[in-house]
Amino acid sequence: MKIFLFVLLLGVMFACDGKDEPIVQTGCESMSCTINAHCILVDSAPSCVCNNGYHAEELLCVEDQNSDCSNYSCESNSHCELNDNTPTCVCDNGYHLENSVCVIDVVNLCESYSCQTNAHCVVTNNEASCVCNSGYHLENSNCIKDMITCDDINCPSHSSCEMENQKPICFCDDDYVVNSAGTGCVFSCDSITCPANSHCEATADDGGCFCDTGFEVNSSGDACVSTDPDYPFINFHIWRATNGYQAWAGWSNKGEYYLREMTVTTPAGRSTRTTYYSQPHFESGYDEAWLLSDEPELEEGEYTVTFQYQVGSSILEKTLTRVAENQIYLGETGYFTITNSVIDPFDGLKIYLTPNFNGTYQRYNLYTATGAWIKQTSYTNGVSCSSGSSNILTTDENLSAGDYIIVFEGTDYSRQYSYYSGVLFTVTE
Image (cartoon, rainbow, N blue to C red; front, top):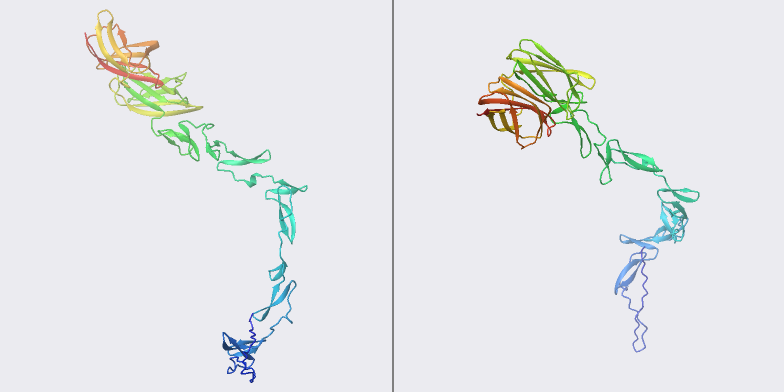
């Protein structure tokens, strides 16, 4: 709004001996202003300003247009004011402009407004009222807590929500348990039964059945099969015996494999079959079977052995080939250490031996160093062996000094299966 300066010129009056009239000194005597303007002193200097009702445009004083509010109309709750000599509508006191309309100022109507429990005050259309807090709803003039359902929560991985006592609770999926922190579910092997030749493992986020060492998943993905082409038969051998050949097979069955038949076919095509009417097996999960032929002598070449065995209700066959060893098979050496062997004039051959395992031996076969069979001795209940102990084995055979082979067969308690172990030793007089 322009400010018009109205200057009241106060003349300075001088008197000369009281004879002259007063003289007024204004400073504007020599100042000529444009039309509609007049001279005033500003800091004792003359200056031209537009008359009231006029304003400066370039070097002229032009008349103000609508320079007052007399004919200016405003909306409700507002009035006219001059702004730079221009009439403008402004909201009345107690009102404010909102969406081009003057509305009444909102006073804090909730300041003294009291609401019930679990509710708060809001102002709508300049009126205070109570509404329920978030998570509550109005029921019989009271704010009641909303029921949270499974739709309102997110359960962690490997879990799902169920309502219990009107509350949503996350439960771990089958084969999963709550972790130690109580914040999620981890895989558990407790209720898992894995198929043969596999075991359960729990990983950080998952788990399941994994094949044992030496086995791999089959093509259908539902079983673990051995990477050993001889499986389930291990330590299978054919070697020269007293008459013809001796076949021996052991296999790891884990209580699942039961041998029914073993058929050995010589290189010349002659076959010998042994049928097992009561399946030989140990609780340890290791089985063995023997076949001693009545051939007159060992036939050199490749032998074919067909095993018929049972897995559950299924009858399976496995055919293996071996080249017969033209020597006495010593099996797993190291089961016994022979410290001395002598010919006693009264007891015959006395062998001083130290077992290197805990178990028993049920029989032994005695051979010459060149493989000629001498005798076999069996023990119904077996002879106990303790690792590091001293044992004396006596045989009344009339032998001379020289080199011999003794082969023991028995049970190794620590390994939970039978062993076959031979030792070459020297007899002195």
